[in-house]
Image (cartoon, rainbow, N blue to C red; front, top):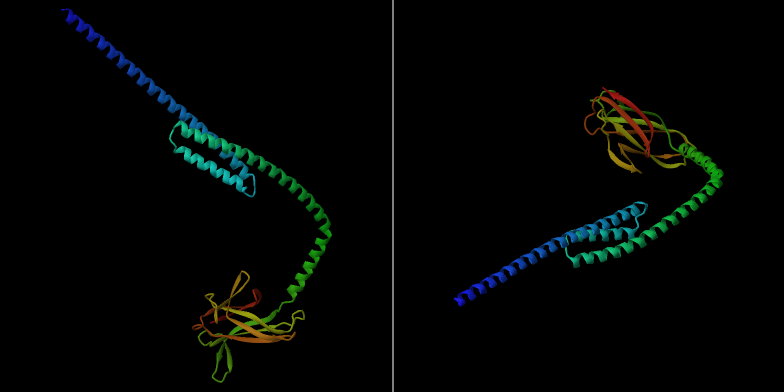
Length: 293
């Protein structure tokens, strides 16, 4: 009977110990879980704070870079380092060691930013002082140059007058269809179907400002469909491209010179209005028109 009571008491004590251990383990596990959650929340908050500080630094660099007409390479490179750190921080794991490394990098970048922005402000001030000095110098130079500019304008205007006058001009430009006999005789005609060629005649006017020698003018003949007849080749003068029918070459001797040229049809001549233009390089010097029926 006593053995039975002793066993019962021992069993109750063992069960009590097990229950106490179970409750203790549960309490400790719950405490560890809560601490883990609190640590994760704290790390997340600190990570967001570091990210916000980096974003603020990025904004300051943007302002400093935009204030300069020429990009400061040091500022651009520093901004790229901050952007790289932000990209890395976004995908990093939330751990004390990881966050501490990022904080150290952030502090180093912040020190670098303070130095770079101070240097940038100093450079801006120096540029402003230099610009003020240059403005003052430019004003003085402008005042001294007023008389010189006036003379230059007069000389330029005179040079332009002489240059414009020293150009070959043509008069009496006309074009018409001709029938060409086997004997070489030419008979003018207004009939498109009977025309073998188009004859273009004009007079190069005397101009003592133009030096004597070999010269050339470009003749352009346009049919009723605005096609360029004849050679229809191109030549470029600066940015101007000219399509011409033929090049009229002659020896100029500072006196009136009568010139006639011929343009053969690419196919049969069509009825309608024809236009003849004569160019001295890219400048149109005369124009006329005629009709073939």
